[in-house]
Image (tube, rainbow, N blue to C red; front, top):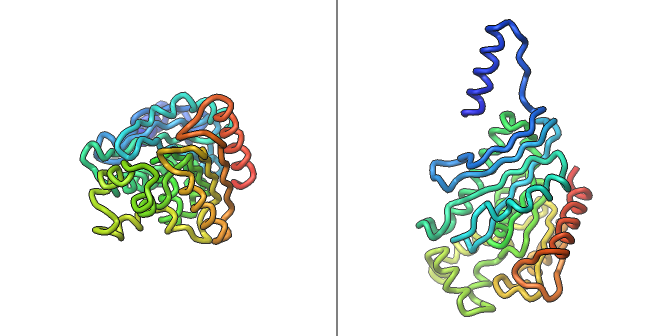
Length: 281
């Protein structure tokens, strides 16, 4: 709203002085921080808009941080923003924060926030100077789960691809067949319940159960020694995607755990760039 008001004020002033006002400011690179998409202070995002953008052609990538749904912060992506800009020139970047469980918001508050953010981005596409029908989701860990859930559950055709770094895909399976004794306790804290007490919540919160032929191309990256989110979660998702005929890739990092850096991260970025070039038109 503020952006629209400022644009309107600029146009009004230019017309009063007899000068022809520019139609928009899409030619200018813009970085906006802590832009609210909801009423809660945690419902905010950082926005990086490229110069020369267009509502006809400019794609956007939406980043979702991890932290077990009860921690983490969008600033975790800050060291990688330049890498995204270099590898995906012309993309707008939306780096999201969302309400956390430790602030009193159990699931599906986090799911609701991601949907609200995507809706906000789409409805304000003209103000941002982006194509509302060409979005990509990328999340890490809990953020990967949220990115997958948004991409599959709501069957939004504007989401052209999704990338998950070791995101959970089946919460009931995690609870019932844990690879660590603390996994069920963590899920009970996040959801406020158990699969036996509320099976519908666990199913409705699991991306695996929403895979369909309409699901967007999916890239999954996962370490084989991940002790936080077992790789079986990503393997099960790949199997379901393949069964439904959805374009997908699972890149397994042998011997790596819950996250990596250095040459492995460079490899991940290379793979993301290649995947987008192949599957996003």
